Length: 408
Image 1 (cartoon, helix red, strand yellow):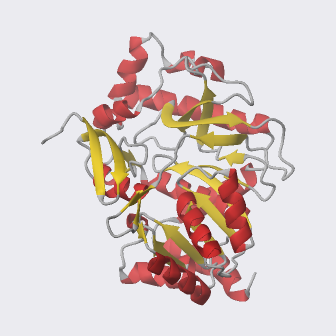
Image 2 (cartoon, rainbow, N blue to C red):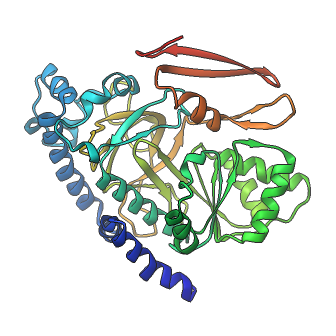
């Protein structure tokens, strides 16, 4: 680590966090750095403690959950074990679409209800609320997982990304932060042409990032293009792929072309980072301190290790709008045994289901399906579900399932 990176990590980042009222990030980061090495039994005890507090809070202050629990004759004190918890109803995306305001905690300070929305990559756009404290814990969890790929505060990072809203608004404060701490180069994959990928190649060689963070499909297409042209690209320390399923063949291609390790990550807008690979690449470690992840069979019962099931996620740290047993729309399986890295965090062996693709423009450009989902679907919550079909370049058929507030 260079002198500048040590200063950025130990001085500039903490100082900026304190000055901007984000010191909770530092507290959570210290907690997560220590708790990741707890034995699994202690992590489960922490999850159970936070789960009981969440269920009690949801029952007392969220009308949606009060009615849901009363309908099955359950009160929070009845939930003593994770087996008891598995008997609670599953939260579906449509529930959030239809009951968002009733899921939010009553009398929660309006200034602490931070609106957010999904990218719509599953075809079902959602809007939801976070508390400011949950924003801080999510950011701290991301920093913890970044470190597993050798990505520290102060390192340069290039984003091969298709969601411009993830780029901070260019205020003087954000520009200063990016100059001193984040040090990001944004390469927009909203649409791709050969000329644009040539530009990416040149920009990476000039910027020389320590890490590349990329949509899995975008990284694959970029690597395939570079290989087909016989290019020798800039070689970063690591590439972190996210947002889409990373296929084994695509991982091999990216590692071959860029000459570095790929670290796969799984997350979503609703709960942020869910699981990431460490340097052993033996499954994805779950962010268990803040999330309770279940792999469930069709009837909601737990699936044993190795068996693929529906992924259900409970956010243990967002009392502003609890998500309890939320069916995220993907499928996965537990990895058996412990990881040689020494972390006690449980691991997912695989995640499947979130596969997006590119549409082809009339001029041959490739338009990211994630980009279209974000800007044509997620911005319109009155659309219940959307499917995009393409049979020929330049033409797209949209199939729309109306939401509650749909207007022609």
